[in-house]
Image (spheres, rainbow, N blue to C red):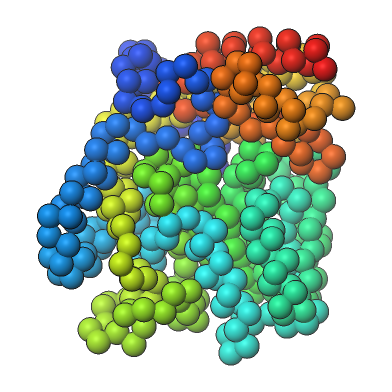
Length: 408
């Protein structure tokens, strides 16, 4: 399995150019906004959004029929489509509203004293300094509750060698390490990490691997069964462009039995158990809108019907070129080579730039929606490119940065 976008270019050279204007018409985004922030919340295409509304209308026409009699079969169909897409058996993936909720379920089980993976005082959770802020807060909470220690591996930039990165992370593993937590694609720095070798080393050492794959589905190829990962959470509303509230958790069969539900409901001590306790425990959490999950097959079909491998490749090239243009403007170091990037890229801004000021000015003066934030001691701007973006969006951003960075 490859974790790079460039490998997906093969076989598309003889195809006609993509109809960019026709593709853009599928999205509901405000036409006067330069939207370079797909990575935060995604953007649901019109046909996928309409498919969700059809599910919602079906629910309202006969709620008892849908939630009382049909929902298990409908969710099973959606999980089969998802499993095929991410390379995992359908009963090894379960839907959650977002990766943070999914991983909180796992974290709460690590705090259970009767869990085979229960964390104790002195145990260690190894991670990196590129991780998502909400989940770092989750791990600090876990450590306060259990007495475990969070080991954050510093990764100086620029990153270059994947092997050196793997060795650097692994050099912080000790005989007290119980969990390895790492992003597949990082949120603050937009880098694709070489998680395969780390997962394999952790499995060989009997260390639990938990991967934050929020940005991966729909962004890079996934084959979860081949990753040697124990737990993997992915967002489906981001790069797969399903409706907001669609995400999933994959758990390796060997650990599913000790994952108690975050919300105890009818699936626990089920009157009519299904073929998977894992699904029974976690799928039904009470009455809620299930339409985001049921719409996932429509999101997968949308990308298949619109040659999304080509779209991803074009967006990757646009992200690489835009990052290079930003660095040519600022003269700052790159975080990593282009083959660490997908459809997002983070660029270092000059010292003294206030990220909050710059983000406000980009929005108020130029209607550019793009995150600018602190990471370690660097101010970063993170650009995301999706099918609705083109070179002109990058040109508007570069024009704005020239004005604002000079003004500063």
